[in-house]
Image (cartoon, rainbow, N blue to C red; front, side, top):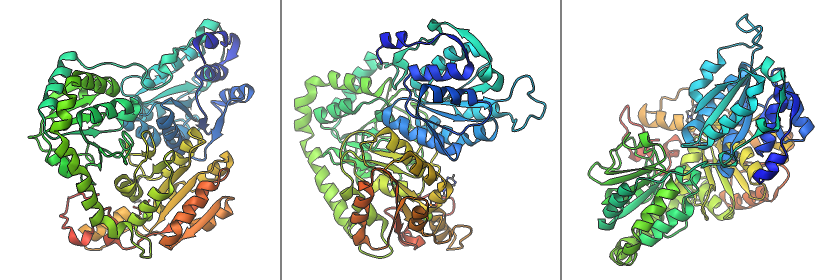
Length: 584
Ligand SMILES: Cc1ncc(C[n+]2csc(CCOP(=O)(O)OP(=O)(O)O)c2C)c(N)n1
Ligand SMILES: [Mg+2]
């Protein structure tokens, strides 16, 4: 909505706090909202009904935060999640921390006690503001009905600026139910704060010049791209620098899709799991890290990259630079702006760089095909139960370029992080690497399917993660989305079982699950359900799921139960793991 229309559309007059909240969200054009009601926020629900706004009941508040997180990652605009006093608010914690760590813009609402009675053992009362405060970028307690528009405006500004994140408005019952005479001016909204990035800041010019000089001198520069590329929508700028200067690009799990995995300059995932990227990092003489925190997984527990390799670190949060690895040049700024400035500074180098780095660039296809040859037996395996690598290969074949794969926190995420290829730039792979909770897959898939109704959306989850969230199949069905849920059924908390196999000589404790028929469960819940134990049937089953546009399909995939073969890319029997080591 252009600002003029927004201004003429503003309400005025006497209304309650819930209505004021809804009116502001209407003007902000937030996408679908997710929540579960309770008494405190009911005026808000009533206003949504009167205004005809889209709001989805979710069966567990943790899931609404996950669904909202995936939705916001696709649209780069904040999503609203609401929870009632006490358990509703505390259930939001896990999902909000995912968004906080991943930099996803979210506006959360929590109902709180009526201040006339608080701290007198009111039902469901707890110290929720203190519990939620470290889970969000900012917690705003709303003390006056009259200040609702102003504080929601503030929430958008915080959620979408700098490193984005979740902002929670804690709204006491009497503030939500209370009334105020509002003026039209009260409902002003700054359109630039309604999507990420709200504002762009450019790195210092002198730092850009130093970084460009370092890149120009390098024979084997390499870009390490993180999730910040998506938040900054830096796709064109990344490709411009990579192609213009002949620099390959490796990515973290969250950074997958910064350039298409199928692009000749993409060298795939780096860090804990890698095809050829880690060896290229070790052989590099200049690393350009963009929108990436260089945390545990990206650095193989801080073993990568070696200290001797000069590193340029571009990040929107100045204090992230140098946290895990010192940087030769610190570029504080927006990823897109910084990459554009680097490319501009290096314009005169283009010709020389492409000639000087021709041999370097031509190594990549050779290295990739050696990796493919080595991995072929796994990727093409026709064993039963199904090999995880074969499942990833079938996903690569069946999913079109515009599809979105949401990956759960268990093995599913690691396997697909390593082996799944996005065929175009953008958020086509969504893993919950902020907090790496299991259970994100199904609700994340719901959020993604609502955000991109025209795109085929697949959520891949472990059976443990799916068990956690089974109730949300009801939500998925009610919303009428054509989501395909791939359940990696290994009848185990596989990650735990694999580590117990590798580190504790197979003394398994609390890592087995009962074998379930998830396809039958799905059918009983009114969804499509297909059980697959033959790898030859994977492609057809995926295509059937993708063809369902109005109800979810659960593909129950029977995968290896051998704990020695559950870790991606590693056969545990050949890996010596010492106590204290982490391999996954
Ligand atoms: C909420 C939460 N609890 C525990 C963990 C630790 N964890 C990581 S993977 C995993 C196993 C999950 O089992 P499943 O979803 O079946 O995936 P699998 O590893 O078997 O593929 C666990 C328990 C976690 N990541 N999140
Ligand atoms: Mg499992």
